[in-house]
Length: 594
Image 1 (tube, rainbow, N blue to C red):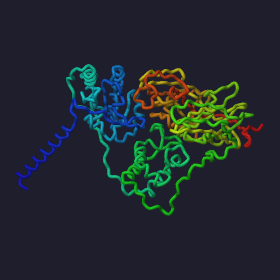
Image 2 (spheres, rainbow, N blue to C red):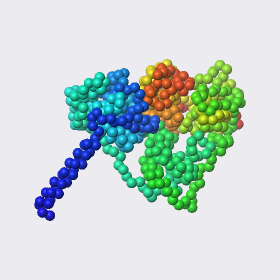
Image 3 (cartoon, rainbow, N blue to C red):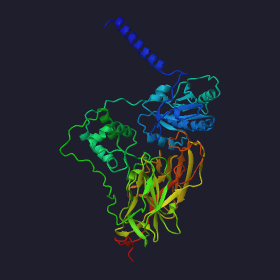
Image 4 (cartoon, rainbow, N blue to C red):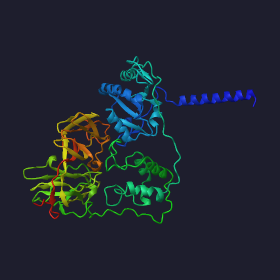
């Protein structure tokens, strides 16, 4: 090839590259352009936008991910600025751009770093593109009409490979002040150090996947325990047609890791009842849906779907004792239903040891949760005599051999029932079944309730902290943990403070769900806690208008039983480590044999 032709081709290639770069630069939104209300998902898996923040004077959008060192270094300053400017109507938002960061991991990052403003997930990179952000922790400052006024660094203190003792240019602060006061911003755009934002790679789906060979085993493994006829699940997934009819929704909740339901932090997967699909399994489901949900060939050894739940069958097996409500509760078609209380018609004649308890409504779709306590003429309803409950996401209490729950002599059972309306009149009667201990009881099943009843959550507070702790009086073996808050509950952490000074984080629930109150059970009670260990519960509440379930953002919220009140009840289940009761139990009565 002649030299002149080579030079021409080289120049042509350079020009093409420059034009391409120029086109990309021109495609980047300009300062003073409208970014729109944007779109992202919150920690509750809901699609939201800036329009969900009413009456804001300015927005500060910070591009984040869970790994960028500069993001972590700048978080203390961002929290100070947010605290300073929140009363002036400025909304800070941590916009997470990491393609591999799940919503639960984003929420956990927020808890770990004590970020008081919303952590949200960018939806397919649309918000990053609308703002023209390229690195983390780049910031964009918008006015109330979503017009872009500044894009760039927070300040010039921290750089890749080094830092200044203090910043010489407060770029973000200057931009916020300019938007708030309507004054010109001298520098509207700066270069940014940090981690380049990587967008999710677009890969061709695996089109070899079929329902019968690949997907049905996953659905049966992870979904059909709940998604079958006769359960609280909104639809069944026991046939090809049922799965195909809900394919798009299945793909979304599996991709988001919203299903199977699990709200424990990612660093606490050691619990025996941990749920979740692997990355490979999630990709198989989403690839299959994207490929058109092919059925494939039904194999000769195909395992039939799990049958419909028998409404008369008990999960604990046929009870040794069954008690039913005398009345049937009639429920309205719509609206909020205050808690109902009822006493079951049975008094325990002696101390009675049980190994399993199941609370069984005959209309499970209307019961959100039900708590049960042992009461007497002198001991009214109180969480201290709590026995067990039925909550979304948890099954009946079933204890291993050698453990027992003791129901005191002279006790009756009180139920606290939270019903939900369904759109039509309903009715419900609840029964409770018990299995007596078979053989010997060596240890009594016990619990601490870590509660706080004296708090007040201010109006519009997005991250209000409430905590308390209790101390173990004897060496203990941990069984599990459970948290109960209401609609403003945002996250809750369990910490153990050991007598020698060590601290351990036992569990983080980073995006607490009122609809999925899951118990977290350790494997084989392997957690030992010496006498004097202090178990602390730290919770945060979102009383802002951005909380989509908040009954009234303008209210000061106090402790109370109804869902428009709030609660902090953290349960620590355990046994005494050195207890050896050696009680022989009559299997016909549940009473200890003299």
